[in-house]
Image 1 (cartoon, helix red, strand yellow):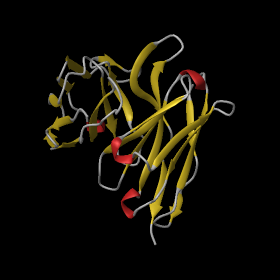
Image 2 (cartoon, rainbow over the protein chains, first blue to last red):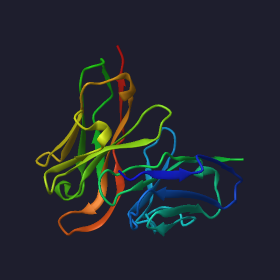
Image 3 (cartoon, rainbow over the protein chains, first blue to last red):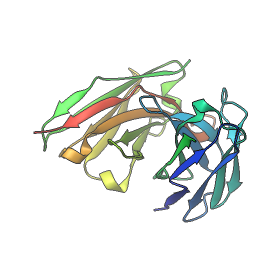
Image 4 (cartoon, rainbow over the protein chains, first blue to last red):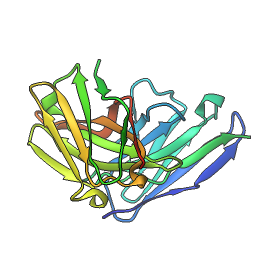
Length: 107
Length: 125
């Protein structure tokens, strides 16, 4: 099975900073990648699909890029409400593996 | 608007089984896959498997092969996830979610765009 490796596992940044999270697939998955935001006590929220397409209703400060094995999620200007754990997930074919997550905090 | 409503919290003994339901409203149930994801305390999201009503097939994660059964009843727009031989490390919140790929027109994406509210399952003797 293809493994998804996210980095970093945790990240602390200041409000207004640009933040980047990376996700690497152990084999190529074309652009079949999604990013989710998961806040404690809430349901996961789809941010990005097809590696770079912003889900409806998601703020434009979120963006995704990449194809093949290497992907990034960026937040252009970090806001307090962005505190959450972020997950990548592949869906080229089953199993639809998640990365281990990146916990994002505010400095 | 699509809504997924899951059954309530469960407390189970080790070795028993649990069956969680996920009732969909809005949209056409048969045309989208329903996937199941769990999150154990302090852990990340874990994909368990999915059911494709349009094809009437299920796919399962290797970690759960032989213990999980995912089905769906298109007449009631309800999906089910049954996990057997429960252990304490199966204690988790179990989510259903809809995959954004439309099987009839073969278009869309594999991200999970609508989620159920989650069902806590506690396994304890």
